[in-house]
Amino acid sequence: MRLIPRNINWEEITPWTLATQARSVIAGLPDASFYLENPFTTPSGGLYSTTDDLAAFGVSILNHTLLSPIATRKWMKPHTHTASLAGSIGAPWEIVRVVSPTTGRVTDIYTKLGDSGNYGGLVALLPDFDAGFSLLAASTSVQRSSLTNQILDWITLSMLPALESQASFEAVQNLVGTYESADPRVNSSVTVACNAPTGTTHYYHGLKLTRWISNATDVLASPFLAGYEPRLLLSSPKSTPRGLAGEAAFQVSRFPQTYSYFAPGAADLGSIGPFTGQYDTNLDFWSTDTVYYGAHGLGTFVFTVDGEGKASVLARDSLTSSVMLRILVAAAEQATVNATPLNMTGQSGAKYSTVARVAHGVHSTVGRLLHSKHHERPYTIKMFTILRAGGEKQVNGNQQQ
Image 1 (cartoon, rainbow, N blue to C red):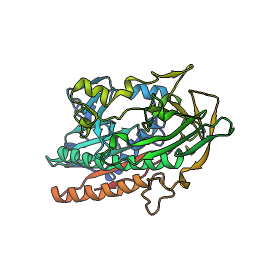
Image 2 (cartoon, rainbow, N blue to C red; image 1 turned 90 degrees about the vertical axis):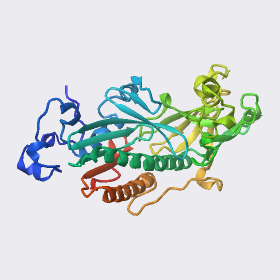
Image 3 (cartoon, rainbow, N blue to C red; image 1 turned 60 degrees about the horizontal axis):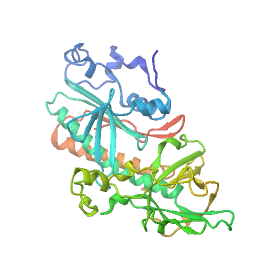
Image 4 (spheres, one colour; image 1 turned 90 degrees about the horizontal axis):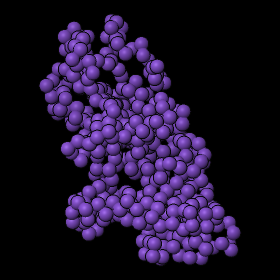
């Protein structure tokens, strides 16, 4: 069985004709490298492709075109770890674990890299953001491989903050607001706010609850939360398919979280070593649903969302689970909301404007880097992200640097 992603022209995988050679980037003499068949390097350099094809392949994975959502999530997991906290190994993934320079959040980037002779290529997927990028390189320079890695560093460290900023903006637009019970006799309400994903208190960034009244009881003041304004962490098992109306489930987080016990600011949380740090900076992952009311975890919240991800109803799986809280004040009406999209000329709407802008910035930066270090500029980069179920939006087209 062959798994064929959409929009990939498989007839161009092996460009042996003069016509395809004319459209190819060839480093050195074609017979010396481009058409050379060496079985020892075939696994790392035996496929001819374009950034468009690699992007289409990446989108097909993220959009669950090739495999079901469950099978995809099982596939995109580490099989083992390396001696470094920054890298894990999947099948066939080389997994790069990156700490965001603005939030301290850990993001796993699933990559497949090929590097042989004068050529190198990579497709990188960020499942947390339904985004990715592809890069192809061709050069006779001995610096090609190391320079490619520098470019990938620039892309990653520019792209992540933009994706986080965009995610924050969309969360504010779609989920932030005050929800109240339709029946005033119930006297239940919840206010969802959002912390900006930057600043010294980065381990408290994201969605949070600033008000939680259940049957006239202030839950935030209860021993369960002891005055905390808890964060909401996305719970995947009940999340809605992309582009379809459904539900998005979140879990209340009572504790701060950092990427390590030696992260900046971790000492302020009482973390002094591996085991104290495990609990002081990561306790939510060890204590999910440890507090119950009836048959439900106390801290599970479920948003009913439309195909655009906009919430209209918030239900609790705990306390009085039959109570449905409907949106009363949307985020757009709240003066305290702190999230702004980075609009870019030519982009319709705000959903992907941040990613489009960072793509433009990355290309400019990469161009300056290559001009300063090497006279050749045979690099092609493409960024992509999911638009809707069954479709994709490729934010930036092929651009050679």
